Image (cartoon, each protein chain N blue to C red):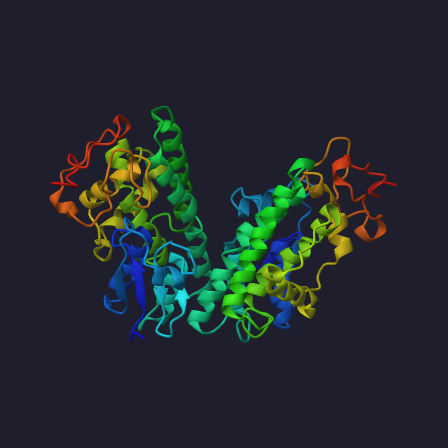
Length: 266
Length: 266
């Protein structure tokens, strides 16, 4: 039995980064023990037994051995149990408001991932429109709750911890789809929020270069460490380290670069 | 300004019944003011302005005039703000476990509603299988957490308040689809839970007769108060009162009974 909770995770996973952001904000980076899972290899049977067959990460084991899943459930659990002031708003109505904003994260995440994984050049504007719809919904919410501010309330909070890892993952859209938030009033409020979220000192666990390189296979339509035809190493592999690989080609619709071109084999 | 929160709702709505169950359990049925919305009529523009265009119910207005949506968000808000012991588990890990079970409610609800609204006789076993899959998932969860008990923990709690209204709505499946949970071990634990939930004194806001009559139009494929061809009155209409109407025909695949046959006009 461990003296602190164990989090099984993939280091670059946005759902895990939420927890890392919380720990950073609370100044307790070592309050949990992170154990790295290599999703390009078969899952350890001992971990699979603990999760009763599911493979989604992160997974938290409490000190008592209880298994908790679902990034948002784990985030709220740690927020309640870590020492110090919670990240969630103390006021119940304000907490309800942040929960309502957080309820948008599923559709927002899905829109971005479907867009990056799309392999049909003719569908690019369709997926772009779907993502912009999500950004407009966030903008309208923020304009209603806090029109002149930067954050949902007065500082980086629970909703920011939930969304920031997705804003950072969507660097893959900037690179592989040339995506930018359009100019214009209907995006100004969410742009201000997003930019502040990504610049926050507690949210610097990943870089654009890392995301672009590691998520290359997603841009080619292969998620969760699965292998593309003609390739023998996933872009999610731990070695060679992403810093030692070249930037991948931007044109995802031209087919996969080779393992060698991607710096995945010598 | 009201001296207590206002909940705009449809009396028979399962998402609102969760709140009524909470109020009943806490012995504070009048802690909120319920205002009835007739979904068979155009929405009041004043309410539509408050909800900024969305029509989903229930909606809660706090004493300060803040608008909260989403049944689960409102349920948690009331649980935190009503006087007395919260319904949620106090222990953070136990609360995480109930939140994980609650995360099943979306797919569970969707499976039951798709099944009742299906109009293709050839797809009946498909929709039945999809719902049974959801029941097995609940069963496995309960077996893992509390194999010998009745509830998720030791009494009717937050997860029970979330699921019970759905168990009761699914009376429409018993009636219109002849649905029963099959005998057999893989349903025993969830059957025990479901039966106890539905029998609980705090969860008696609706009856099988009421659900079967009011949800007739759902069984014919028309949701949310919309009108079927050849019909001029929705089964969700407040008058004639459901108690004054006959039981509808069970065979939903034979086409809609008339307003008169349903007792909706004299």
